[in-house]
Structures are given as C-alpha cells and as structure tokens.
Length: 181
Image 1 (cartoon, rainbow, N blue to C red):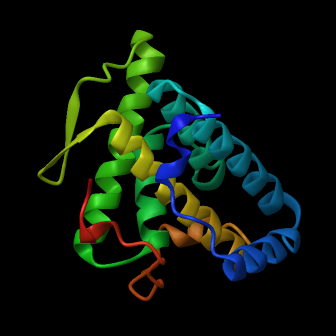
Image 2 (cartoon, helix red, strand yellow; image 1 turned 180 degrees about the vertical axis):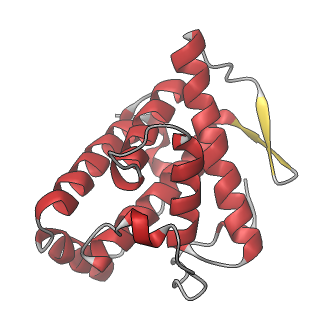
C-alpha cells in the first residue's frame, strides 16, 4: 500500500452512498469514461513515484475532459474545462488551474525525460510546493471533478460547454483557495 493514503480526507458515509448510487445510474460513454478515470485515479493513489502518479492522474483527467476531435493543446483544454466545471471564486480557479498545469508539467518531465526531480519545488500562485504536494492536490481536484460528473449524471457536451458561461456552477465541497500546503 502507498504511504500517502493517510494524507487524504476520510470519506463521508452519506456522501459515499449518494455517489455510489449516482455512479450506478450512469449510462453509456459517461459510465465508461468515469470508470476509466476512477481506475487511473486509483493507480495514481497507489504509485510511489511522483512522475508515475502524474501520468496516471493525467489519463484520468483526459478520460473526462478530453474529446476525440482534437488532440492539440490537451493541457489547456483539460485545465479550462476542469476549472470551469468546478467553479468557485477567481482565486480558487487560478490555483486549481495552476495545480493542474503543473501536474501536467510533472507528467511531461517523466514522459519526455524519463525522470522527475522530486527535490525541485514549483510555484503555485506564489506558494512554493513540492512536486509530490502538487500531485496530491491534483488528485483531490480529480476526486471532486469525478464527483461532480457523477452527480450530473453525464459528462458535459464539451462543444457546448466550451462556448457558454459558467458563472453559476456550484462550488465544490473542497476549496483550494483557502491555503496550499
């Protein structure tokens, strides 16, 4: 078992029951994509190497927020869609976007160089964070995103979602704007 699982919040029994029931009610592509995201999130939680964790996490996010039409600018697309779907105040959105982008940078380090420098810190909105802390925060964001999609019952039609306003999207239960590790 991975060492870091104690760092994540405990599951709320009532919320867990609601999420499981909503997941079981999903159909077709939405259920398939959420299943892939959950499997990859599980792998991200189990990996010891931070680069491997970043790769698994990016696959989870791409399963939910990517589309089959365009493979270019995937990091930008994933970041914008995820942050817009989560909602929240501008500062929360900026921090969530920075965390997702840095997680993709960490993934890119492993994929393109074969190594992630775990001693290196990265700046997230003026706060210096270790690559491990960034991936931990990105995992929590991914958890919230999966719960939002399960509750919605479907993955948004990205071609419509991308061009419409989302000022009234409910804020998730977790607020990353209140302080980073």
